[in-house]
Length: 92
Image 1 (cartoon, rainbow, N blue to C red):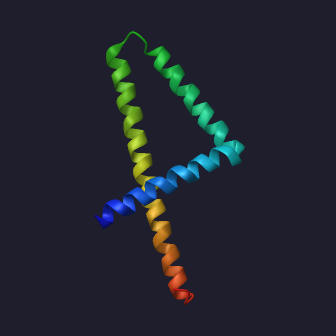
Image 2 (image 1 turned 90 degrees about the horizontal axis):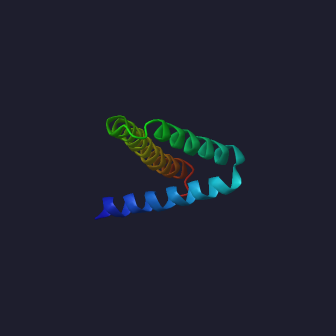
Image 3 (image 1 turned 180 degrees about the vertical axis):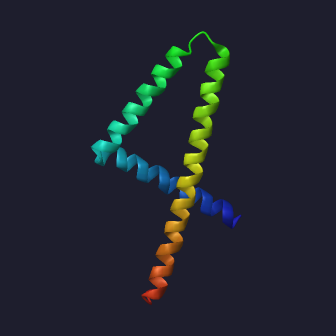
């Protein structure tokens, strides 16, 4: 139950951070737009070839899965590091 609550907390805040990032960082917004366009271009090239289309989708899904896992771990580690720092400073 606690692990699920932490996972939901991380997911909610991660979504909020990336949402804010999209509106405040032009470079990030441009990177997202470029990725979206490249993805569309690749799927257009694969149009009509179900095997290639599935291979591309599987690749994109695996890249996204790795990225999501890395982001979750980094966020959780950042929270742990923050708590450690606050303890060292005697704040908590």
